[in-house]
Image: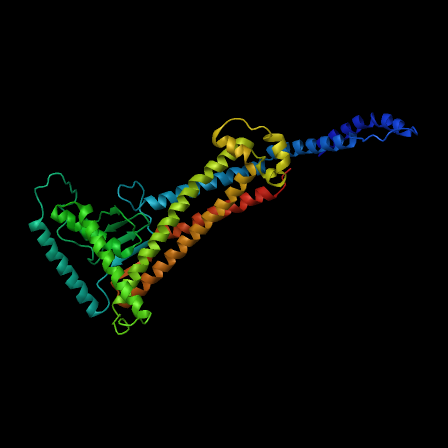
Length: 402
């Protein structure tokens, strides 16, 4: 403030030298009133000088610089953590699988469930033998690296562990000899993912193109679940002709249809988070590059910053756009922070709901054990980073640092 006081006193001395001439002219009885602009000029000079000193003080404030750089680094860490979480359960990924939900196949609690699973496994073994004997074995264009490991389709074997994520799933068990096999699909569509795994194994046994067989299986599965779910909903609505239908077994199809719908929502939300996480470091990096730590003062006194920084923008491209539209860019950044946090909270809520639904199914028959994966436990950390960056960003914009 000493710099401001010195500058103002100098301005007052300059203005006082012109004051006597003005007063002597006004003492004359025939004098015409003349508008004195010296005070307005003096005030304008003081405002400009104060603004320049405040901006300079901001640039020299080490704490403010650390906060803004911390926000920028936080946005980069958020992007990295979420990207690694999404990519881990995909085929060919270089990072470990961090699933949202994990399932481990069991024998079942009741005798009826155990008998049903035994019949399913026997049927799959028979189908596997048929696929081996009648498959197209002379197709040299198809390469299956793990064909020697497969003896039969083992999707529902006891001990198999499935790890589901938004963009894929991984399976490990006796049939994979302890290795983790990952494939790309909408992993959190639980029922369709199991059919995907079954079709993939059957295609490798029969030496046919996996994509064609998997697509056929998924299309049949989708139509069947959709039809049975429609019957269940019509029964619940007491529509004539469906009110006497026994829907005891159709409740499962209703839940499978629900998994499909929830998985689509989570897939869209995860893509939105990735896009926002890519945009935020770009915006913050360019703002820091252009204005240093003068950015926070701009939100309070944007006109002064405009006058001293961007009254005649030069150049083209993103740097020029941010420079010319600073106010809008700053509030856009806040809006993106808020939207990203809401998307992450929605994803976490849907994960909890899907886990709860699977948990109810687990308690009723004990075919599998369901648990949260490491990717789910990583979500609160990502949300904390995102919301913390948003809080400090708003704090920086609202507080006067000069």
